[in-house]
Image (cartoon, rainbow, N blue to C red; front, side, top):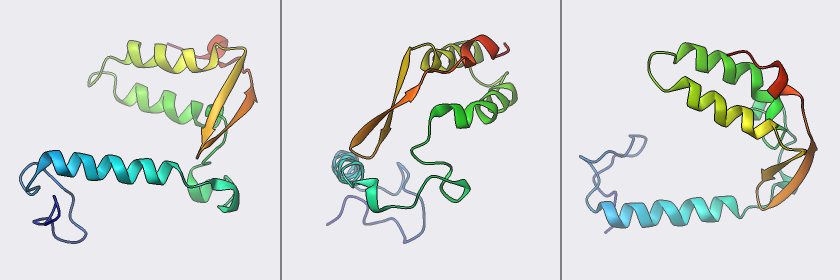
Length: 115
């Protein structure tokens, strides 16, 4: 019996409809590990259609800053901005794409980001 046997197809899993949370967590972890192991070389190139999968984080900078502004009263946005800035404070940025890593040039976003 699957850990999520009470979940109808197309419905999200919740604490209320998962029969065995430990098994569900294990199954989900296995799925994510397998998904991460798929090599992206034969997949679609980064673009609007896939949210620029595999592109440098700089692609998401404006969208991230807008999201943080919208979440100002919901989360600790100072901490979130700090994490976002640290992604760009390195001399080189490793971008994980599937099971490979590529280096992207350092960016100057940490100097241009606005609190």
